[in-house]
Image (cartoon, rainbow, N blue to C red):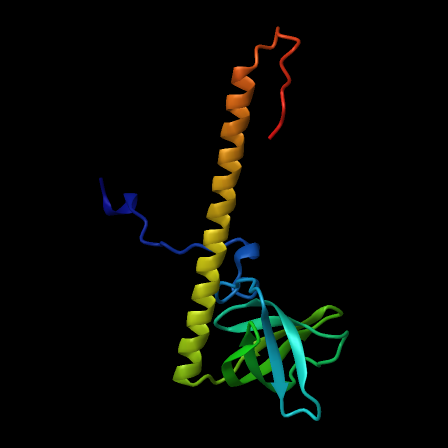
Length: 162
């Protein structure tokens, strides 16, 4: 074998669907019972959160209430308890259903709290998925046992779905 048999060019390119512009910077979770309160406005405004990550969130808001590029300050509430206050953020995108928000300069404490909330929400989502899978497997096992107990030639046997 010679040196020509080995290529030193190890470069490659990803397909367009994996480009950095289209890829999320961090994992998003769908929180239950999370709202944000905007501060610095004339009235107190609460908005439901669709999803959240360490880099930002998507909140439900009336159509085009916010404009892209607008700076806001918000507090994050979980089950009506303020968990993180005075987060500086910027509206990235505004749609008919809500707006995407990117967190700006976070303090170390805000960053730690946000990471903890996102991690806890991920743990709960995983636990819920496992529970649903176990219930599905148990239901399938009960159905198999019920169908095995019934002889198909026996007209008096009812095949009942559990």
